[in-house]
Image 1 (tube, helix red, strand yellow):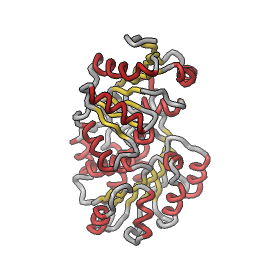
Image 2 (image 1 turned 180 degrees about the vertical axis):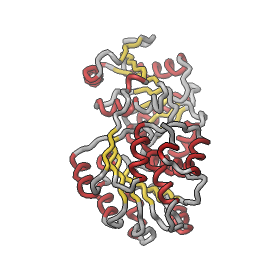
Image 3 (image 1 turned 90 degrees about the vertical axis):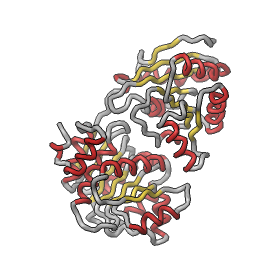
Image 4 (image 1 turned 30 degrees about the vertical axis):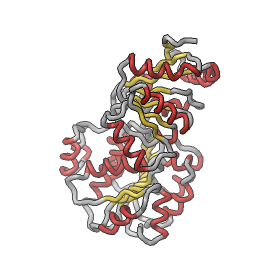
Length: 372
């Protein structure tokens, strides 16, 4: 199937072709026509499935076909600043041949530039809930003309405590506003939200391709005191570029990044104690290969979306199988292959046993010169 068969307009088709996109992913095949139909949509899809394009493309197409330039008619709510930036970048790329304007709204930085964007006129805003509520309360943003609302990663909004703000925002949009909700999981509170806000939605569920089909998984049994040396050895021995290393704490991420840098391996930490501008700069350095290793905490890593990320290293074992799946799912995306390595010390054996029960035989034990 092609995007043309999904009735995607020519200006957007040209933008997609310039990016080398020829065939829609399964979520795009289902979601694009569903959203273009005007119905509310409930989609269960994880990151790495192409879900961002699945709502960006029809939103751009629908709003380009209707009048109201400069009036806020489209809203995408995301749980994190990094995800908001990613969605904004995608909207700009897919809509480069359209006259629509967008504004990016998130907290942690001054609102001055964001307000200036809004005053110049915006057809679509991409926002995190907290900053959006701030600007609504200041009467800078008005959602009374909204035609389409997308709630992206609704389950993460719940996890991060944003559902109350989301519910307030929903009371401010027109009743006939089309709503699209995307969530990787459907906990009870998200199900209640769906029942309250979506009218007879088209339901879409895309089963993600099994991680093991694309990702080679391995574990090193190593004493805690030898992890630092092992990390340097693995990166150097395997000539790794673009390595995402997971640390349990912000302090730990800083220390790992410092140790690697002292060894001549360019590395930067990425976590919530960094300013938003610093996080954006760090991520940009990593994407353009200026930085070889990105050391991140789990919460910060939720906003990282890098299609071609070949290596993930669990410097410390995650506490849950869900966290492990999320971590290694940063690699092996969009049909690419990847490698996920875990460092397991004697105190982390219980976490590894849980993973092996979930996927027996899939995590190979690897040898190294720093064995216990």
